[in-house]
Structures are given as C-alpha cells and as structure tokens.
Length: 392
Image 1 (cartoon, rainbow, N blue to C red):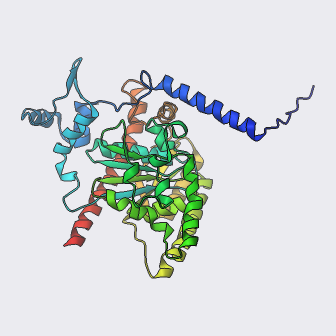
Image 2: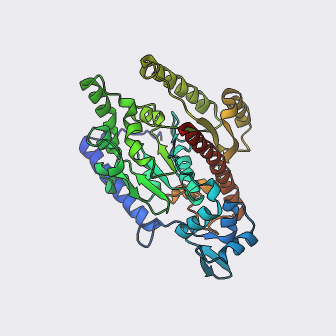
Image 3: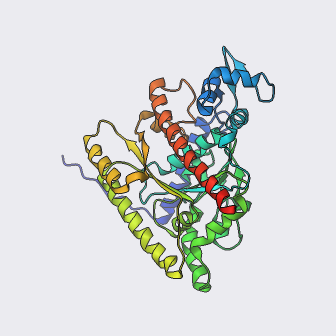
C-alpha cells in the first residue's frame, strides 16, 4: 500500500491557534526547567575558578582575603564558594589593572552574521557573561526580533516583553536614547535591552522616517541612542538579526568592534563573503558618499561549531584563514554536547552547574569560551587606551 502525504489546509485562525498553543507550551517548558520560581540564577564560583579568572595562585587569593576588605564567600562542604555578585567584587579588586580606566567609555561590540545557526546569539551572551565574570559591567542589546538572547536571560519575548522594553520606540522616534528600555538580569553585572517580534516594525519605521525627513540618517539611530549609556557600562554587546537589515546596519554602525561567528562550512563561508560585500556597498552609499568614513577598531572572525572529526571542515578552515587573515581569532569553539544541553535548558556553558555533565567535556567547552573572552578583553583594553590617548 502506497503511503501519500496529504495536504493540510490552514487558515489564519488555525495559525493563530497554533501560535497560542506553542506559546503556552513554552511557558510550561520554562516553568519546568527553571524551577522553583521560573527564575534563572547565576552560578556560584569556587576559589579555583576565581583564581583562574584573576590569573593568580590560590595562596595569593588567601593572602588577599585575610585583609578583610573583600567578600569571603561561604563554606560549602569542604570548599568555599562565592555568589556571582560577590565573585565580581573579588575579581574586580584582583584585576584592577584590567578594569575600565577613568576617561574611557564603553566599547561596543556587535555580534553579526548573515546566517542563522552559526552560534551568533550563544557567542553574544557567552561573551557578556564571560566579561561580567571578569568584573566588567555589560549591557546586552538584543536586536533580533526572535529574541533568542532575551530568552537566554530567562525572559519570554512573546509573553513578557512589551514595546517599551525594546529598542522599537527609539527606532520609531519616540525616544532619543535607550535608557528607557534597560532592565537588570539574573546575572550580576549584565543589564539587558530585550527583543520581541514587534521589532520587525523597525524595518518599516526607519525607512519611513528617512522618507519623511531626507536629513534623517537612519543608520546612526542606534549609535546616537547608545551615547547616553556609554559612560555607565564597560562593554555593550549587540546581538543582531541573521540578515543585513536596517537594524543590523544600525548595529554595525554603532560598533567599535565586530565579532562574526563562522562555522567552517562552505555555505557559511560563502554567506560571509556576501555579507561583507553587501555591507561594503551600503557603506559606500550611506557613508563615503557623504564624505565620511566608518572605522572599526577590530573585526574578529570566530570559528564556531567546529567538529574535529569532520575532514571537510579542515579545508574550509583554511579558506577562512586565508580569506580573513589576522582577523581570525586563534581559538575555535567546538561543537559539543555541552552547548546543545545548555541551549536545551535556555542557557550557555557558563550557566551549567558543576557536575551536570562529564567534567572533561564541560571543561573543553568552557575553556574555549574563556579564551574567546580573554582575547576580546585584550582588544577592549586596547580600545580604552586609544580613547584616552585621543583625549590628550
């Protein structure tokens, strides 16, 4: 007997019912995974983890704690642990020479790629968490209407995000800056501007404003909207839609640096070439034609979702290195079961509690992200130094 797949007609009412059903499921799933209060909480850090972040020996940490000017943590079993807020205080004191110097402002990093599924949002949120653990104050701006970064922070875009929690009112001209939308998160040191599907409206609002006012520069809306926040934060991380949209153009024009996660696959590499080609054309039309320029302090290409057993990825990796040269960070993010498990629990590798997975697998994934954060922090410090030099 031949089996045939039937058609299943769906009217708009059917689609609305389906959307409601899936949204309700998401609420139940989140409530189950984030028990008991459907709220996320940042992990605690051990003395060994604090020492690793600060780059010191345990004896040095113990010596400093004897001065009674830093949180001592809490003894849990036979080891001492610090909640994240206290850990940040300790790390900031131990790494004072890495903190934002007086006279410098936030370094804005836009995480972008033409395609979805390249670990863009994971890279953005993990970067923010890693920098926060190092003592920096970070603002995450979610500009992807899908709200994936917002979801990773334990907020459901469809159910818990209103327009005033997003950048949409600013793009529509109702606010001049983004201060109105900033909210705290479960992770100490990280604030968030949420995203929701209503952000799709920016793709109509921005060109409409440009049409009404030829002098309006739509591509600088976000850049100017962040000015009021740049002295309040050390780093601003922007997560973008997987497209070269009006919103993505704003995010790139607001950036001091760009991070592009790029899996070593032929299709992803080809897509990245299209991305930069289109962006160059747009810059020529929007910026250089007006006698201006756009300078990025750094552009980083991050090899992501790398499978060591995939022979074909080695060939494409070489393409990436030859094509992007020194822009390729000297670290690769492996595709492991750890990241899949973390994503299934609405989190990152930094959210996973100790003992939740095989220690070597978790350690391998975290080590890669630790190194990514370390390399990008070095560039952030260089930008701060340049800012101060330019003010002299």
